[in-house]
Image 1 (spheres, one colour):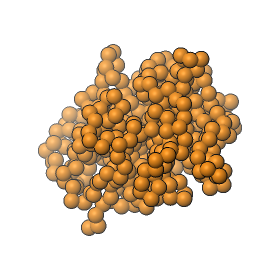
Image 2 (cartoon, one colour):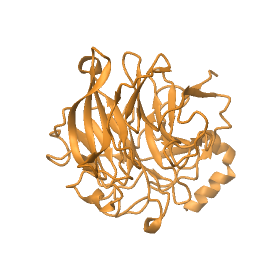
Image 3 (spheres, one colour):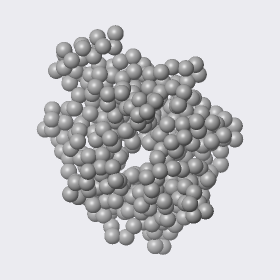
Length: 386
């Protein structure tokens, strides 16, 4: 049946470009997404916003108009009036080895009053042991610089791979932090470990009383390496992007987008992709073994031609992916398209600014990409009026 669906997609390719492709059954890959970068080139305007960055990872918008950007070696940079400032907001002592370092960043919803910022970082404990922690920073209002305020969660295992790292404040005001299983798959199923999990805590570091596992920050588990979190406007549903296996006994590709519900088990390493097991949840879509997305940051778009779409950045896939979901069924995929394949190299994140502009962060200076002149960069994407 799946092969017939793919064949149908190929036969009516022109129609699918308009409608967005064929969706497969729940948890299975859809037909390979069409790259529409050429078809929509007359509508999209894309340009350099900031260049010559050192492995940028996250970007947030401050109410006063500034933009904070994390660089994995430890700096939080300031962009003001469209210009990158010479002095960083803060320079943290992190262990920027492999996939670790200074990763996610989130702004407190009450930043104007409390000046709090939250970051995920990898560091060396005891001189040689890699650990991850979630730290609250604060802005010194007299200097406009960041200072370390409080460690919220500490002593979480780290490695040169699979550190997760996305930090977001949810619609419920809670802090969410994604953590990979550090290349040790068994940790994802171990509820006594925080690795291979999506965590949820109060913004002061305490455990919410309504978490699914009493006294634990674990919100969902069975994850391999989740790197993106986004809440769907209007429904509040949470979605996460996750890296699939990289070969060996598990095969390759099979990257995932998951609909996240509290307390649910997303299967790794017992199942992955469209495999099934009682009590475990399949992804709403996965890439299949023939394609690797290596998905990282994601966001739901508000307004414009892509209103309501979930965008996510692809590292190894070197593309921007646009996922359209059914408005009523949280697990039903309508279409998947990809854009700019190979044009800008590895893409780490996609963020929407307050004015609706989209920003894309590249990651070609991380040791795995082909560095282009001006890398790494933040690209600015807008649409021309019809």
